[in-house]
Image (cartoon, rainbow, N blue to C red; front, side, top):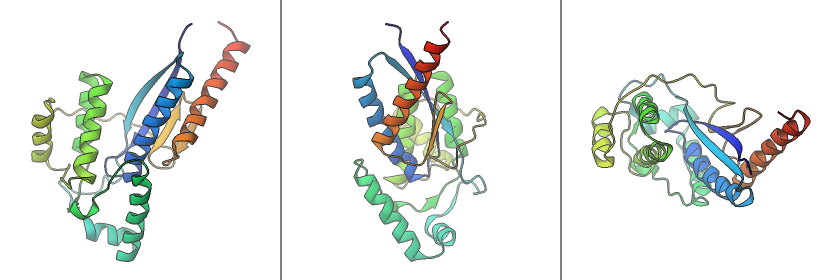
Length: 213
């Protein structure tokens, strides 16, 4: 049987906790899809979206930035509690107390783009995972070139930078684009993502039946 192709584009930024949560949810949804539809070849593309390009490099103090952004320390605490609760359901333990700097993520995203040009998807995903961990779990400043160089040595990955290809996220990140037909924004949950992928395949197959090659 010829494999059906499902192309998934994920818009993300490394300082968005919902993007890391959405990454975990997508991984689970793709595992379920593989079990239900072994005839489907899922092709994943990570699309960098820099949410805060105005932040100077290598960054600004994290706590004052978020208090200014959300209006009060109480609002920040409520938002972080919400993220922690959602993250715990996906096996994530966000460590906001360790984050001292809100970084400019441009160099990190350019490194991801460089890696995508020179390595396979597994390597790209390993780098993305390490950079998410660096920011949200370890409190490392991923806008600092010295930090990125150290991660490069640790992961045994060449560090280069490539210009980012434009990508318009749908109403913020994380965003999920399935075969250019179905779009979702936000951390939607495993079953919503799976339903979107299944619906996208059904649309593709219906068109193929109506207009056979």
